[in-house]
Each structure stands twice: as C-alpha cells, then as structure tokens.
Image (cartoon, rainbow, N blue to C red):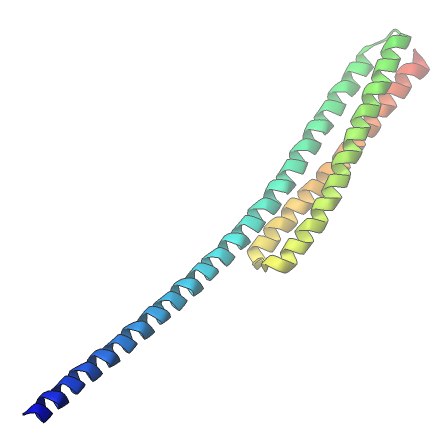
Length: 167
C-alpha cells in the first residue's frame, strides 16, 4: 500500500513538474512574441516618422521660398512705382534687397542640407515606391521654388538698378 501511495505521489509530482515546465515555455514564447511585436511596431513608427519629417522639412522650405519670392515681387513693384529719385529710398531699397538675398542664400543652404538628410533617410528607412515618388515630387517643387525665387530677386535687383539709373 505504501508503494502504491509512493508511486501515485511520484506520478503527481512528475505531472506537476511537466506542467510547470510547459507553462514556463509558454511564458517565454509569449514574451518573445511580445518583444518581436514591439520591435516591429517601433520600426514602423520610425519609418513613418522619417517620412513625415522629410515631408515637413520640404514643405517648410517651400513655404519660406514662396514667401520670400512674393515679398521680392511686391518690393519690386514698390520700387517701380517711385518716379522721383531719392538717395535715402535707394539706400533703403538696396539694403532690403541685400537682406532678402542673404535670407535666400540661408534658405537655399538649409535646403541643400535637407536634401542630404533626405537621401540618408531614404537609404536607412526603406521608403516604398509611393513614398519615394511623393518625396521626389516635393523635392522638385522646392527646386522650382528656388528657381522662381532667384528670378524674383533678380527682378527686384533690376528694379533697384533701373530706379537709380533713370531717376
């Protein structure tokens, strides 16, 4: 009878030990799954952040350039509206142009740095074809804004030179 009870007791302890090992294995697998799932989510979030950040920077440069272009166009119209030469106005116009051109150079240099950053993000973030196309369109739009702003600034400078020459 003691042998039967001992055998029964060993069987119960064996079953408990096996069940405990299975529970530990399930917990480890569950933890690994959660860690893998979090790593994938983090990777996706980083990818989305990189894409949105690149778009934000490009839009910011485009807006700055458009504002500067419109300002240069408006100032050019103002210069053209004066028909009597005044030295103080000429100096003011010239300083305004130099300030605008300096701002343009700063924005342009910042944009060039942003282009380098975007290229590095494209390599590291594995953007999809659609995302790459969208960023390329934004890059082209900013390049067009750079060209348009250069033309506006040249027109502004020409207006100032004409103001001095003919008045």
